[in-house]
Each structure stands twice: as C-alpha cells, then as structure tokens.
Length: 188
Image (cartoon, rainbow, N blue to C red):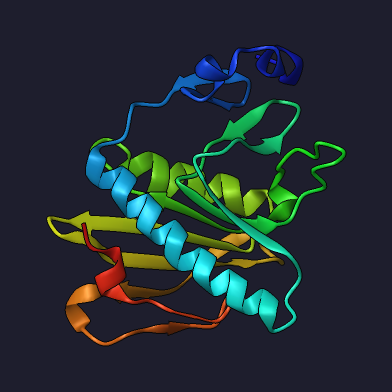
C-alpha cells in the first residue's frame, strides 16, 4: 500500500489497520482494560505536559490511537496507544510524523508482545523518536512501565529503567518531561 492509497481510505477502515513496509496489518480491537489503561496514561501525561508548558516548554499534545507516519516509502504508519508530540500546524493540516513525537507508549496485550517489545521498539528507534515506553497490565491496572531512551549515535533504544507498581512509592521521571507516576491514577 502506498501513502496515497492509505490517505484515500475511509477513516473507519484506516483506524483499524497499520501499514508496515507497505503491507497492511489488521489491528485487533483492544480490551476494555487496555483502553482504560491508555486513557489513564494519556490523562497523566497530559496533566504533566500542561504543567511543563506552563513552565515554558514548547507546545505539546497528548493523544490516543492516532496515525503516526514513520515513513512514506515504503509506507509505515503506526497507531500508538498513547503519544506525546510537539503541537502540529492545524491550519495547514500538518500530518503527525515521527519527528514530532517525543514519547510513544505501547500497552502490551495478549498476542502483541513481540510486536510491542521488539518490532515497534526497532521501528520507533530507527525513526528517531526519543522515548519509548512498553506498559504491562495486571488485574488492577498498569503494573510496569519499561522506559527506553534513544541512543542517537546507534539509533537504538537503551533501556533506562523499569518502573514497577509493586515497588511502591511515586517514581519521578525527568524525560521527556518532568512527571510523577501516580500508580493509583493508573488503576481500573
């Protein structure tokens, strides 16, 4: 599939697929728990991005399940669970591309382990996205957040740390923006 073919698709079709190296990949509907976790993560990230902007950070947006153009040829279009990115030029209908992204979050579901922890890890790093989180769930909500940061020399992610709810406390993160991970906010 080419970029032109993708852009001609009706939205109800394009929101159900990703395109990797020009090939269509069907995206299964996420579970209620997956959707709730994504929304709670987006809310937490949005609260912290707004605070960062109040303190002088450039304009940032947070979104769920939106088209992220990794490359035009071959077409690679992903739909991250949650994404933090530099504000786009809405007047000129600027497309969300990898160079706008600061943080991409993928929530691991049954059957998405390899895709989220290996395939996308490589794709997002190669595209130059500075931060990537792999989030895992337990029966009560988000249980771990694996944090990766881009090594620009190698264009690979380095594992920064894994935040675990079971360790207690309120972890503080400095990148891509300062924030506190309030585990209670990430419960179902």
